Length: 180
Image (tube, rainbow, N blue to C red; front, side, top):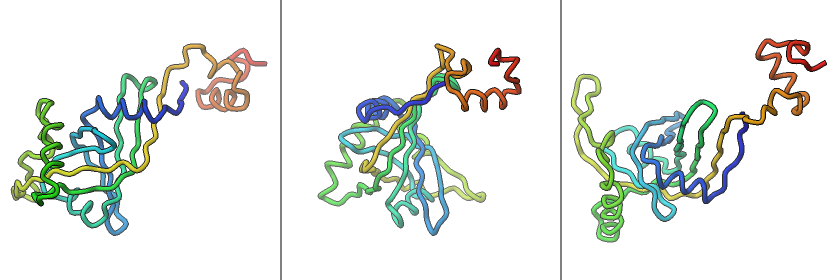
């Protein structure tokens, strides 16, 4: 298997076609990661959520990290990591157009409101269904793609010391692999 960096443009294309992401935030040194539906447009990820840990924590600390991935198999995948800044799209006059834009982007896909706007029961109590739109301004983006080693180079000895280390992990001796 080989892992290589993908371009910014390829990372953006993955964001544009993916709907499920994982957003990570932190509050008072404690990290929190949760899935959400998202939509990409013009250097922003848009989302919808009810008030809970994610929103409370992003309000307190707007710096977030987002993971988007596309997995075909354990050896055939792509992932994009975003570092960005949370912005809540309230009913304030200057944000109405952005809020409407978020709705327009998100609603083009089936069940776009899940998991952000579904009944949630915590500690035996139903959580208030107050929803809000938000966006994450992308400040940094990077991506990687894993692909099967179709040429067999990972086990050919071409990788030198790494190849020997890998064969030890697999439990093969130098003689078993034909590398003398």
